[in-house]
Length: 208
Image 1 (tube, rainbow, N blue to C red):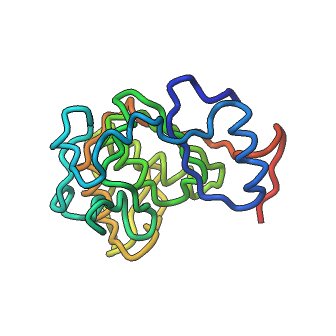
Image 2 (image 1 turned 90 degrees about the vertical axis):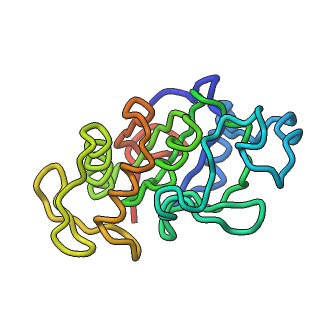
Image 3 (image 1 turned 120 degrees about the vertical axis):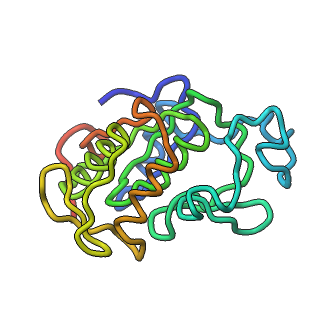
């Protein structure tokens, strides 16, 4: 359903099956990207705020109460929760405002995608066809659009936009998860969600 655009600079995925074929598909269409050589001009030990060439917002351990941004080693941070986030270089200055990031298999924790959008002002296009992931993404996007978190009924459970009881993934509580989304504060037009799977060819996908 469309090819990666020319401004695509980053792709991340939670692979299930067919990793090699999927990577080759992305390469064939220019969507499997690595940072351009000039990003190495930024010292790995510097912070985005210390370099005028890096567009990221301030990276600080207290941002979003440490939920969506957690310091690791001197040159790395974790974007997102412990369950759904990823450790990344502290400086990802190859990401520019308006660049496109594709996220495949986002599941029921899209904290990494939200953190990328909020920290780097990039556009994130998320994909996952599973019903629970669709419900979760719609609830998160509604939260961002309305600046209102869904009702938490227990520590881990909340009511989604369809009025169905859901549970957040990992150990983070529902109230804390959605509060961090609001504090990260990406613009609603930075995020897109599509209920499609990534495959080596068009057609129906078999899930296990």
